[in-house]
Picture 1 (cartoon, rainbow, N blue to C red):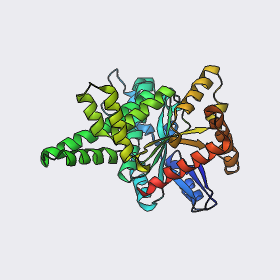
Picture 2: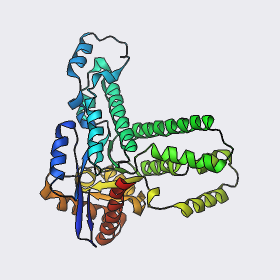
Picture 3: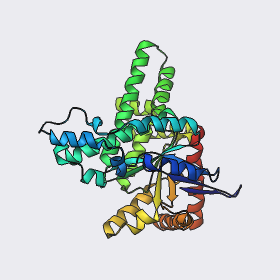
Length: 344
């Protein structure tokens, strides 16, 4: 991500690590400038870097048709304490790049005798969820890679939401109260804190339908009392919807944005080869509310950042039928808002 503030003439960029192997490199690089923000995490492609190879090989030799009781034993978990230690030391540290990916080599090559792709995806999910929980605990935004795994993403988010609701229900039982307003405030606070302050869907490859699913899910986090009331009242839907929209508008602010959607020239244009994929990609860009749109360089070399970001801006502008300047200004405001969630 790359954002330029015209008022201060400052460029802010995020450099993302993908594995504990390169965490120190990302931190060292960010030390070049206070305007380079580091992000540490484990990318779904690189779970092999934390694989306990000796345990995996031992289980292969002793494998049976039975599913292993605890697949977490296949991974080395030292990284989790290390990531938390880094978060405690670096207040501007973001969590990323994390996520889920069915196309990862780790998934394709995971031993079949240990469950193959199904086990590999579950390991991805476990690692992703733990990083999401850590980001929520330390109130840090996250960048999320999700490719061909939208269902698994929503499943994970729903689990986090349901666990937060259960936690709130237990608190209410211990501290029983008849004050509905306090209950609603407590529910909203508990649910909101169960998630990171901001989530950027990196080089988003989902469809317009997926965008709407994510935004609908976000609404259940930001307005849990309204969503709950929907289940109780089915009559007068149009009036009810207008009333809910009015209520949401009354309290809406920058802090009410959870999900952002980023697009890059390299992934969303160059790697998108079929006409069907291109059409669905454009439809997805068009479905993004203007205050959620991000453009990304998604490059490895520093010298390619500006060109990569310019290409992403051009792609988004073409897809949305907007001017380059409008997209550049909008995505910059959104990018700076995403970064400012570090202070939430």
